[in-house]
Length: 64
Image (cartoon, rainbow, N blue to C red; front, side, top):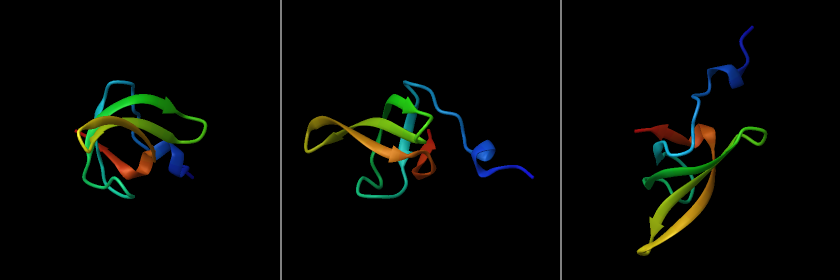
């Protein structure tokens, strides 16, 4: 049996992604940090004209 974790895409720092769910749905940005233990990505997006780092679940993003 294959675990869900094995099916998740692999992300690296610098990858461009689109956020698909949550408060920042529709935003695009670059991955600043990957937290594999917590399955979270820290994505740098532009929010109100300022660069902002947001933390999102790996299942909430799609690589561009």
